[in-house]
Length: 63
Image (cartoon, rainbow, N blue to C red; front, side):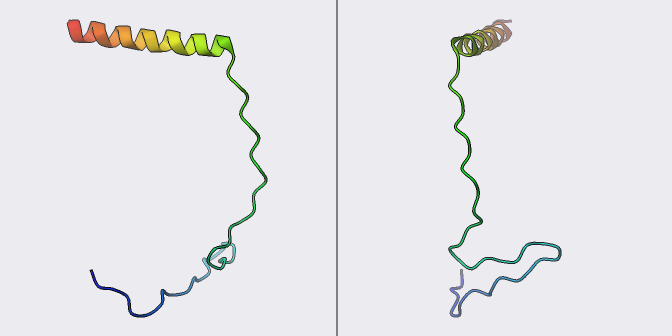
């Protein structure tokens, strides 16, 4: 692989896009809301689904 002896080419605008940002800058975003904790019912549904999938896989392998 050839090493580059000169700096990387600069950013260029894209048609109908936002202007390029200098290196190291990011577009500010508002903080994401925290995800609510799972309820016991949601955990139970998850375990039931996992058990059904495991059972289906075992039945499929044994046939």
